[in-house]
Amino acid sequence: MHDNISLFVAVVEAGSFKSASQILKVPSSTIGRRIKALEDEFACKLLNRNSHTFEMTREGKKLYEEACFHVNAIDSVVSELLDDVSGNKGLIKLLAPINLVASSLQEPLSRYLKDNPEIELELELSNALTNFYASNADIAIRVGKQDDSDLTQLKLGTIKTVLVASPSYMKTIDILKAPQDLDRTSVIVTAPLMVWELYQSTDLLNKTTFHAKQKRIKLNDLNVAKRFTMNDLGIALLPLTEVKTELEQGLLVRVLPDWQGKDRDVYAIWYRRQLLSKRASKLVDYLKHNLVF
Image 1: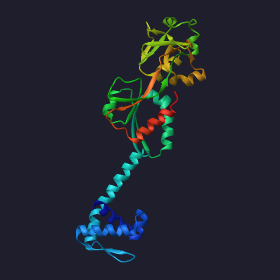
Image 2 (image 1 turned 90 degrees about the vertical axis):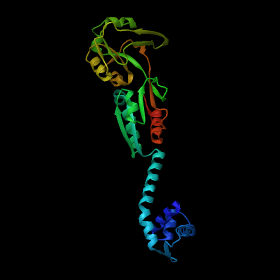
Image 3 (image 1 turned 180 degrees about the vertical axis):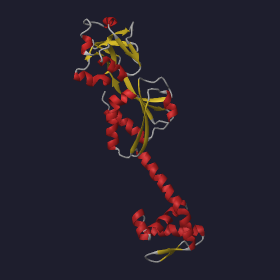
Image 4 (image 1 turned 135 degrees about the horizontal axis):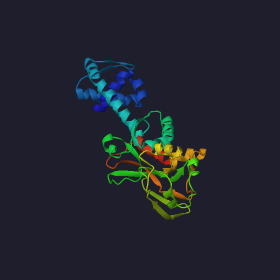
């Protein structure tokens, strides 16, 4: 009966069986048969029909006036749900670290939004994973695998970390030949890279851990650490994504270029019990194939 009521509303709004048949792509004979079945259900005439047109009876008019809002509302909900399932329209809420967005994520996100004009992005910049559970976010981007069995985690890529300093600062110190020589330099230490695990580029099995005896600056923001480094205040271990441009422009130089820091894996994460929406899944897939670190 519900389907036939929806058909009845569509016929009234189309103005004729022929028009309704063209719009709905249903044969006129089928429409007539289903309207007749609906009249039999109600035990009353709903439409007075002739070969070309019809008029609503009093009962038909009452049914249309009472049902059209609800039928159209359901159609609207179905349309929105289909858009949601298709992944081409709707809201995505994304949590991501501030520095990573600025250095690596903003450009691919911009391209994705241009290619998908009906996607809305709510981007919350935060380094605190604890916000993920309370934020009602679809996905979060995090550096390093999270120690939480309730999360699904998909690796998006890897960021290298390198030792850098300004050319001016390097002129003020003796030549560095090995990681232990860092003890006689000014060191800028940034969370989460508080302890420096260093690997020889030509032999990654050859590694050492550097604990700075004295820290000239200790802070928790990578971009600010980079700026202190550019201000000739010491040596820092920073993600290559943060310093790539400065290295290319000669504003910073590699220190101990035969050594590198520990790689930092980047993951898309979401709550394991949460069904990832199609639109969020498509964004994750796009980032997986388009992020360059």
